[in-house]
Length: 313
Length: 313
Image (cartoon, rainbow over all chains, first blue to last red; front, side):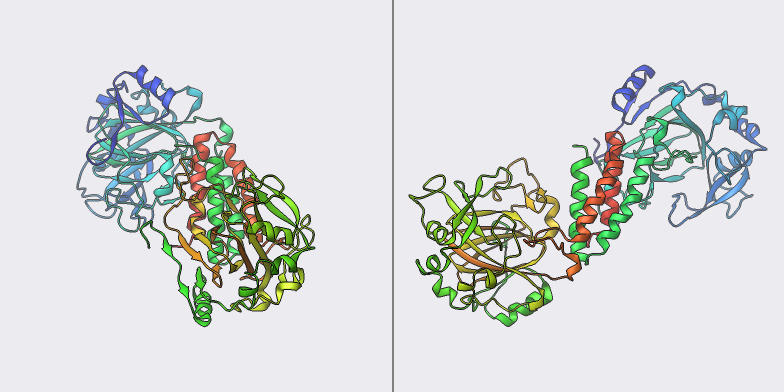
């Protein structure tokens, strides 16, 4: 734990040890100097990606605030040629732009045209570059869910959220800071669906008194770093400079647990979503009572859930 | 708040002020030197109650441990003539006894024969003494649920529990210590139904780390004290000497909220009981998930309940 109460993530240099750790612990870890293939050299090149990817339209996040905020929607979805996006995202100022010269760009690739997103797959979506990227073989191939290309301008920060699939996040170009919180911090993260309402994770403000600015994991990612983010672990990623990453999502559980309509790997697991939906009727009963009585029986309900389903920490 | 972190209960000497306080605050309070009628003199008399009540069979708690424990059932239900019970409960040693000369007695009156308990009513159950007792008119008569005669040997302590009806507890003979916790402490009281599993409230032990030995209200009751225990407030009563009390239960809410089969005033309110029962299906869904995932979605459920129904303190 460092001076700010953050724990550092275990960093491995050996792929086998990294793999063994994930199998045994299913906890965040980093594999440094991973063999991600020729992409490590090729994608650094100013023109390579631009040329390879031009002619391919994508829908990107574009905004003037580097801290993307899903609540205030301080960004727009803009359709743009991927070659142009790569070019613009590298620069701090762009004469050609949507809103302003200093606008920032963020791509999270999806298959399809971006309007009806489908499960992203680097090999089929971007065959012109997919051979450049070798993903670390940490899980069985049949458990692979998707592979996602991520491109971001310097400074872009993505809101704190969780996915329901394991995430093997491969940093190819540029540097990022990743901050992670365990799933059992869910109570304190002020969630709306899978996202935290807290935008400034270092100074959450009085609206969010329980938000843990300590007791979190953090790591600075560099090119050829592979960060393992287990399913349900909350993460907040900030690009320190222009960045290109590919992350591979994996299903830890049997298929039946995942929502078949999930394109992003973040829809709630089927029994979890059902439990949350069934809770509406429980809450409806509680609301029949005057507030002080409702509060009491709500606490009885909470206690029952905790007794029956919480793991002992 | 005294040195042990206990707050003391507001004590009134004026019935009107007491009544106004209850109407406005619905919080624990004591009316001292209440006009409870001739019972204050008559029931002190060694022989009066014994003579008036003999010939009436009751089912009483009898045991050798003064701290009655519903979990280990360290007492028995014994059928006994109420005159005999009054006589024995006054003494520390009894040559005639069920189990041992030093056994203790506790009566919580019910109507009927004690096997199929019905709502207790002092006037109809014990007309020979009911005229001696005048209960303070703090609530509308039509809201009255029951009146209960309580007789206890010196030292008897009744487990911490809550009732769903308001309780106007009138101490007639003897002294008691009452300790109370607010309903919003429910999470920390290790409940099994309406009762706390904690028997030693001052030294709960490592099994019960959250049990609040502070942040509770406490009051020493003397003859002619009336303690108001609001519905859902947890209470633990210890008789310091031989005691006779009558407590009157009142319904604060409309009839529809109360379980019509409730003879004691402690069955969960209908919507509360329904909410707790419906939760079984929610928990069944959660249990379909592997434990770490179940824990996560359980926390999401808890957060949802808290967001929608907890009062802000």
